[in-house]
Amino acid sequence: MKYIILIIACLLAGTAQAGMPVEIDATAQDSAGSRLVYAIKERIRNSASMEQTFVQSKMRLKLSIITMDREPSNSGIATVYSAAIILSIPGQTDTFLNHYVGYCGMDRLAGCADGIVAHMDAQLDSLKKIAPVLTKF
Image (cartoon, rainbow, N blue to C red; front, side):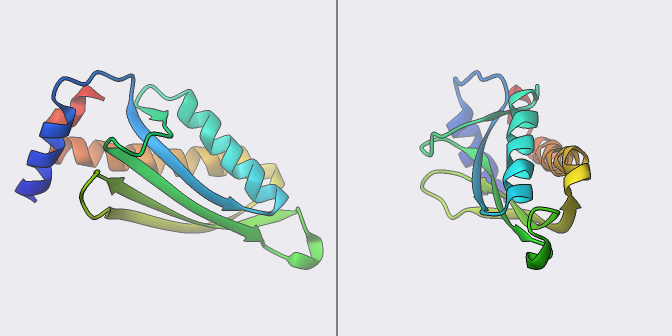
């Protein structure tokens, strides 16, 4: 654990960003799932503690989310999702932080997105307790 904290400290030395970079890796071929992913991205873009990134050469949180129709016979009504939160440090093995599964109807997409982003923010707060250098984000 001390090794990971040291790596985080070295990677963050001299960096100043608006929020913790977050990479979103999404597989959402159903319409409700696509809308859920879009809502998550919007919330991250509006977050003070996180910002969406496409740069893989820097430390970042990764949200890996996969969705599918809850009921293929009623396509587009609801989505089932699996979301993993991962800490990715270049040159190191990714560190699994947490995983969530759930389902979300079209009328609850905003609430589901809020919940997933809140879980990510809670993970970020936990990391900040372990590695105070993360308070820069």
